[in-house]
Image (cartoon, rainbow, N blue to C red; front, side, top):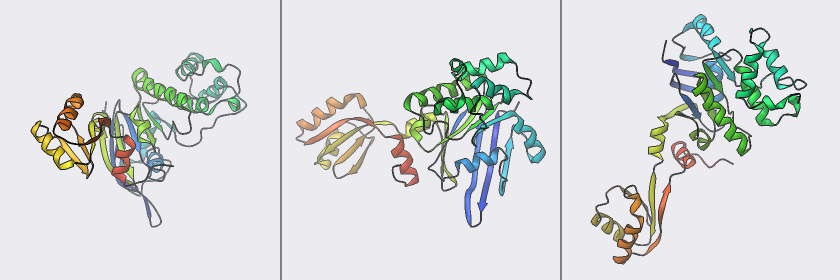
Amino acid sequence: MSETILKATNVSKIYGQHKALDKVSIEIKRGMIYGLIGENGAGKSTFMRMVMGLIKIDEGNIELFGETGSRGLQQARRKMGQSIETPALYPELTARENLKVQAANGGVSNREIDDLLRLMNLSHTGKKKTKNFSLGMRQRLAIASTLITNPEFLILDEPINGLDPSGIVEMREIIQRLVTERGITVLLSSHILDELSQIATHYGILHNGKIINELSKEELARETRQYIELETTEVQKTVVVLDELGIKDYVVVNSSEINIFEKLDDVAAINRSLVLAGVNVSRIGTTRQKLEDYFLQLTGGKTHA
């Protein structure tokens, strides 16, 4: 059994003079929750649709479950589920009735439908029609419908978009349970890194159709590590004191700010040493680089509206 679920090599999608995807290479291994992060228009949905075979590849190659070529990919895609396009939910039907329609040709038992309703926290909906569901409930039902075929690989495009805070937490928990309880590998997208950071194990940052960085959850934590933020009007005197204290891992950000990346538990002692040395300390405390700031630093973008 191949440990690599998806391997995309230098795939491109071209519309006229515009490259929606430009030589994108991604490898997703079994058990990963791979978060594709990028601002709106970065190419996330285009990539997902290409993997699902909804649009053709103009350049490059895609391998799924070790299969390549049109026939091999067609077979491999039977092991996949997706919630990219608007799901075909029937507004006048209940959650159970919707799943029964989806399961009509799949030989899925009532017990399996019950399990899906429980998994998606929809067991309580009873005779309530789908048209009266909240956005979060419709999102969960849409994912349940993709699970009818027991996929090994699930693709979710912006599954948290538009949900309220409780809906976001619920969706995260469900996706994690899909991985831990069902062994499903997940590719999901978002335009907000902070959302993905709560769930993804690996990240690909997509910008203007190109992958500009790939990193694991652990690597992301190191990139956005905690530090002591120090503000002072006397940077040069501060640097002398830090050197005397044996502190080497620091960065002078500008004429009034220094970030210190070691001795995070010694804030009070550092502050005392600075005061005794006659340094005017405006502010000192521990903080962590915001994930959105890290993303914007990489892409050179502006804060999302």
